[in-house]
Image 1 (cartoon, rainbow, N blue to C red):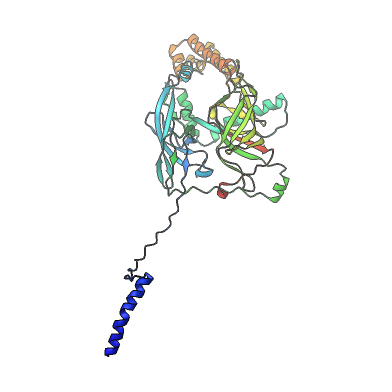
Image 2: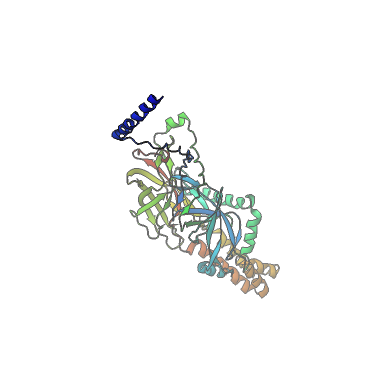
Length: 459
């Protein structure tokens, strides 16, 4: 045992010297680190934005009083695209109010000459909120002051040439159809009430159902992270026979004019530009015209309005598309449709020429002149003759003609109304064709060469 202990004591210095020579040092083993929690990877949600200046076209959902502060609801007439994506569907609800009433001097004087002393106004509205599936969103817009019931004009297609008698007969049938439709179409009660109001010397004003406004976003609209854009509707499938029959593809392009265009000042050759507001896909569902492209064209024909009821004419077409990335594409495009004031009576022919329908009629002046002459008839009741003679000047004219108990007064009122009818039908100056800035138009184009573009989904 003593020998063994001596052996260990002799070997211990040797072991210490060996470890020092090799540079090794013994350290305590570090504690095992606690496992870190795995953080989930959060992908950034895509953000969608409508830039300031985005154009909206809306129409009133019902009748509203023409009063400052009156709440108004309107619906989108067309879908809204942003960044090439469908963001707002047609029919999306907007809420706003009447913000201003300005005197309509022209309408007031016209009414006073015809026995209507209603203080007509031009109404201005602004919209403050937009209804989305995720809730209401506040917006700021420009004041819209161009409200009027509108209709979508479309080209009738090519028609064979017809002589003056055939055209006159077709016009007469159209007028008869309009008269019959007044009684047969829905809403006859409201139309009859408005005619009664027009006979009064003073009647309430209103914003009619279908009144449309154009306005722009004043500030960008940024959608929340939980907003999901609606899916773009797929194009209708076409039969193989129809595809084979198509010799050239036609693109229908929805755009808005960048500047006002009017037959009063436009000259043939003047430049015309329109911004594409909806991306266009061909029948193979391939993007051919992205949103934000610019249609470039020129005025093809223009004629200013003249005296004696001669209305203006306007026609323009497009020869080029300028894509956002700077490339150009040759096209052949003409006007196929446009939003127009229903009261203006505009029409588009098969070539895309915009004119105003003539409302001149010899029947109304002759009828009023005949009634005015009844005041001098000696037979019959004088009250009835006076009431008939003073027709055409509203209820105020009839009351004045009957109350005066004078054939001359009744006849004078009647002949005055007949003279106004002659002026309205034949002597009044014609109307120019006016396409305001941001007016929505529809263009049919044929590409001169096929562009090679990528869909947003492929980027």
